Length: 259
Image (cartoon, rainbow, N blue to C red):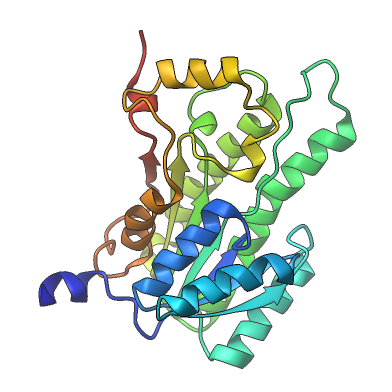
């Protein structure tokens, strides 16, 4: 037991979760806190963060909130500065902010498409740039987990703009993994299948749910708690020390299904 505890122990580390006030990333934050990390939830709504922080503290963990506009690189820099001032270090970054849209291809406006790219892709790049620069400047190790999507691997109907943005996140992560691998910074993509996340609600109707279940060998949605193990593995510089540039799929078999 001591061996396993040591392998996945995050005590003394600081994890910043951009998008941590959301459903999936909030559960990921809880898992990191239970593994010993001091967790920083980053988002727009302090009210949404409050309930999650109470849950983390009730489980014996430590967490606090930092407000940010994830679409603004200067705001992300302010997050880093605030965390360093309060916690003195940062070890783990999760880029998990995201938005979705069911607007058909011929109807989506340039403004809406660019907004999706800005939140899902450009904000992820900015997070990687800001935190990696700090680690590189100080010759420190770091783990970055970018939230991808099963739609980034396989195009899905009704969410083409979201799929395109997530496919770009997958590619970006691999490029950054190559860029920084020999300098102690690991970059991986966590790829959820179908979970009851907020951005899915606009596109989930009974017929679509039936189609998803027919394509998911486990025949159910994932529980947010089922992202915890993968998150801790990718975050840990012990258990995951040789994992970088990886797309870790957690999807109940969706990506393995054909006909």
